[in-house]
Image (tube, rainbow, N blue to C red; front, side):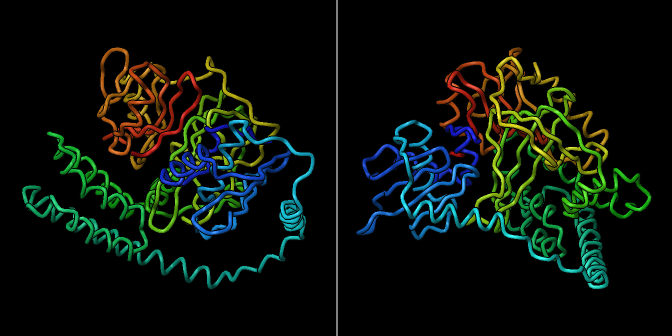
Amino acid sequence: MTTWNEAFIQTLVTDSVTLHDAEKLARSGVWSATGCDSHSAWGFVQGSGKSPYQLCIDMTDAATKCSCPSRKFPCKHAVGLMLLLARGTILASIEPPVWVTTWLEGRERKREAAPPTPKVPDTAAQAKREAARTAKVTAGIEELRLFLEDLMRRGLSDPAVKSYAFWDRVAARMVDAQVQPIARRLRALGGVPFQKKVDWVSLLMDEIGRLYTLTEAYQRVESLSESLSHDVRAALGFSLKQDEVLEQRTGVIDQWQILGIQTEQVEQLMERRTWLYGEVTQRYALLLDFAHRSHPFDAHYPLGQSFTGELVYYPGAYPQRAVVKERKGDYTPIPFGQIKLAVSVEAILDTYADALALNPFLQYVPVGLQQGWATRNDLIDTKGVKLPLSKAAQSPWLNAVIGGNWLPIFGEWDGMSFQIAALVTTDGWTQMREA
């Protein structure tokens, strides 16, 4: 059974606005007829309409149902009810209302229903689609290579380089070529000159160099080692299906700590990166999930908890991404003494350099400080050495939570900035929130 605390609830919410609105609801007197048992919670909440909204939660998998018209899942009302549940303000009931049991029974029938007969794949059609995409990608990568070479000939003194439109145009071409990860990185370059950093040219050149290396590697992908060719293709958006990974790869059994969760909007989808750490193998693993903006993720992982399970890594020279093959038993809190992070910024940079030596196409690596301190702009170790924080981490909320204390801080380092994913205070694990 899931541990219903506020850290876990934060992992269910895909945007800070919903969480903020839910917090206000949880503190207000708009609730009525609330109740819970070991499997569900329910209640009514007064919205802007005449009649209150009816909502309930299936506590086995965090599914929710609310009569409000919101297209967000979970909506602010459902998250508000979750917060009441986590804070122990909902009284236990002997039996849920009929409308709750009807919904729960319907969900159970769907789970027990026989799966549909899988369609026989049309291998000829699949091959045709793959060939068409490969042709588009190849043409797009060649166009990107020529663009970068032309840019270097002209130099970065061109005023157009300091505009979002300059990078957005070529990013749009990469979308047409079906290499969305590259388009995303190109759009991000448009903001580098506006970060008010004296070394913005160096930062821009570093990423341009990485992109050019990727275009050169793709031209030679057939001659690379199998693991590195997987990394090149993954950087361009090609990925194996989970079923293929589970069938072809050997699993790794460990006690996996859930150290950090990042959720970002990518086009019309929400991307969630959940970082795990194996206590025995001392390896990180990335669980990558996608969901439409108006739908919840299929699975949820409570921050600051650990579980015994078997993971299967995707192939690569420096494997990060993995899929959970089996989880055994319940989640348990991570003991404070079991948190193993770097002791210095120097150790973080060494980890990053070692990772790039194996896979130069990595966008970020999971790292953290055992004792870190954050200002508005920097992450600082106990020796006073700094790493610049990403723009998303530069919020008054962060300063309020840290309060000048030295705390375990976990996140992602991409060579330019550190994105905080989670930190551990005296109140427990806290997921990073946007400003």
